[in-house]
Image 1 (tube, rainbow over the protein chains, first blue to last red):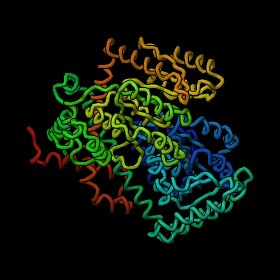
Image 2 (image 1 turned 90 degrees about the vertical axis):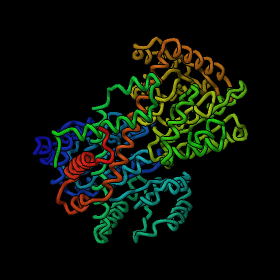
Image 3 (image 1 turned 180 degrees about the vertical axis):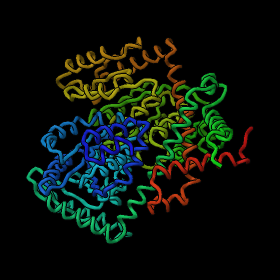
Image 4 (image 1 turned 60 degrees about the vertical axis):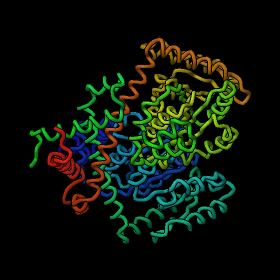
Length: 320
Length: 320
C-alpha cells in the first residue's frame, strides 16, 4: 500500500489533507492511492446539500454538524464553490464561522474552488469523498453553492441529496426546470419562520406530482430554522429513513454501482486526454494552423490519425 | 460547402439559429460546418464582458448594444449563464428587457445555459462565436454571469475582455485572487453614481501595479452609469484603442493563434473521448466493477489497454 494511503486509513488527519491535495494537483501517485483506498472504503453516508445562494445552506450545514457531533458522529465536509471568485466571499465568511469546529478532530472541512482543480471540479470532489470515506468519517456532507450542470454531476455522488429552499424565493420553478426535482431526495425549507411556507410546500408537492413516477420514495419536506437549531433532528430522521429505503429497495447499491462505473469512464477519458496532450502539445500542426495552411478541424483529424498510427507502431506497450 | 454553412454565410438568420443548435446538440455535421465556415471568417471584434452577479452587466450590455446600433454596427450576443438555474432568473429578466432588439435584424441574442450543451459550455460558446463571425456581425459580445474556471476559459476567445465592477462591492480582491486581473483588458466601473468610486479606482490601480508586467497595455478604467447611458462612448473608445494596440503590437494575431491552437486540442479530446465512450459504454468491466472483482482504477487501465490494442488491430483505418 502507498504510504500516504496507509496514513489516511490510519486516520492521520495531515495525511488526509495531503491526499486531497494530491487529487487537486493531479499528483502522479493519485490513481495508485485511490486504488489502495478502494479496498478500505467504509461506506459513509454521503449527504449532498444544494440550493440557491443566500438560502442559508452554510449556516444550516454548520448547525447540522453540531447536531451530528452531539450524537458523536464524525463528519467530513466538502464545500464546493464553482461560482467563486464572484460569490461575494460568502463561503469564506461561513468557513470563518465554522472555525469553531476546527479544533474538533471529529470534523474535517475542505473547500473546493475552481482553482487548483486540474482534473475538473466534479471529478476532484468525487475523489475527495472517496478519500474521506476511506479515512472513516461517519457522515460526509457535500455542500455546493449554486446548481449548474457540474453541480448536478457532483450531486450524483451523494446517497441522499437535500435541496434547500426559502419561503418567498420563487426558486421552485427554477429547480423544476433544471432537473433538480429528479435528483432531490429531501427538501429542506430553511428560514421557515418567514412568510410563505405553506405556499412553498404546495408548490413543491405540486412539482413532485409531476415527476418521480419511477421511484417509490417520495421526497419529504422538512422545515428548519437553522439559526435557532430548529428542524435539524427532523432532517437527520429523514436522512436515516432514506438510507433505510436505499438499503431495503436495493436502490442504494444500484446508485453506488452507477457512480463507480461512471468513475471508470471518467478515469479513462482523463488518462487518454492527458496522454495525447503530452504527445501533441508541440508539433508541426501549430505552424500549419497559424499559417492558415490547414484549418483547425483538419488539424484535429490529422492528430487523431497520427496518434492512432503511433499506437499501432508502439511495440513497447503491445499487449497481445 | 454544407447547405447550412452556406445559409449562414449568406446571412440567413434562421440558418444561424439552426447552426448554433447543431453545436449545442453535437450534430454529426457539426465539424463539417465549422470547417466550411472557417474559410469564411470575417474577424469580428469579440468583446467579453464579465463581472459579479448584480454588477449590472446585462443592463450595460443592453445599452451598449443600443449604442453600437446607433453607429450602424451589427451585434451578435452570446449570454452565458453557467450558474443557472439558481441565478434567480436574472438573465431571463434581462433577456425580456432586451426584447426590444428582437425585431432588429442587426442584433442576434443567444443564451447558453448549462443544459443542452453536450460539448461543454466553454467549447460550445467558442464555436458559437465562430459561427456568428462567419455570419458577419461587426461586433460579438460574450457576456458571462459569474466567473469560475470555465468562464475564464470562455473569456479566452474574446479579443477584448471587460471586467465590470461596482463601487463598494469589495470584488477587487476576489478578482485579483482569481487571476482575472491577468485577463482583463478593460475595467468598467458601473453604477459610478454610487459612493466609493475613487476608492475602487485606487484599488484597481494598486492591483494592476502588481501584475501585467509583460504587456505594454495597461487596462484603462472607464466609469459608466448604464441606466443613464453614461460612459458607453468611452467604453467603445477604449475597445477601439485596444483593438488598435492588438493589431500594431502583433498581440492580436498571437492571441487568435493561441485560441485556434487550443481549439485543435479540444476537438481532438472530444472526438477521442466520444469514440472510446461509444466503444466501451457497455462491456464486461461493468460486471467486474459491480461484483468488486476489480476496482474502478484497474478497470480504467484495462479499458485503455484494450482500446489501444483494438486500434492496433483495426486495419480498416490503418494509414501507413
